[in-house]
Length: 284
Length: 38
Image (cartoon, rainbow over all chains, first blue to last red; front, side, top):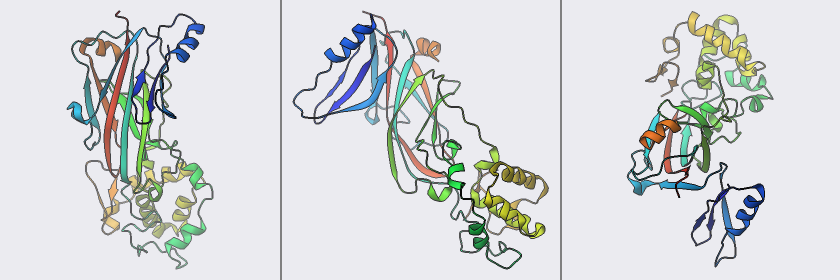
């Protein structure tokens, strides 16, 4: 069975459910059941039911439904309990959920990605041994493949919403995966994003991404660490961190720095950890 | 999840919000599932 949800300009929606008997009947059903009336053009949403069924129970929930969590700002993590009415028939197969959401003004806890921890043009302690400002060194040692390495699908947790379903929180998919770099200065600042999203449950095809925990640090926090270390190591550390010739190696070195070096708020002015996690930093 | 759903007719949806400051709003949710009743 294949069903479509279509929207006709200024007119209503047609949702079709078909009985699957053979491949031929599916083809016929698609062509017979579509009705577009009184309109020159029709816009079809990318919604597709891919399971075989005889009938489907379809329910749309929005702000008028009185469901807590819908049409109100979400926090982390945000749970929404979606309940079918009591007379809903029993399920005969996997359910499908479409979620429509928007994200606005997403900013990581970083003002300046080039290394100044407090957002000012120079951090003071971030000069290299040659006397050049830290900016100069960052630009000179910049990895030309930086954006490619920082593609969002490598680090989806920094800029995308993960959708989990069920009491146990089964991860099914991501929202707002755009392939854009996730460097803090470039993360969807001030843009409205809206996307219709489909997630089948259970979804064996859901991408499973893993990322080293150190990467969840804002870049300025990492460079702040680097500047502190650079005071001892002759400035080599900041070149290493920004060149990102091996991003993973850089982060490993920072993880080691966390163990062997005083906490950053002891050496970097105006820097303190933000609640509730200890691995994210806010720069006032 | 479907076993649980068959008993309670409830689905728990959890959103993991990315780190940082942002405004995230779930505008609407559409639920569907197949059934075999005539």
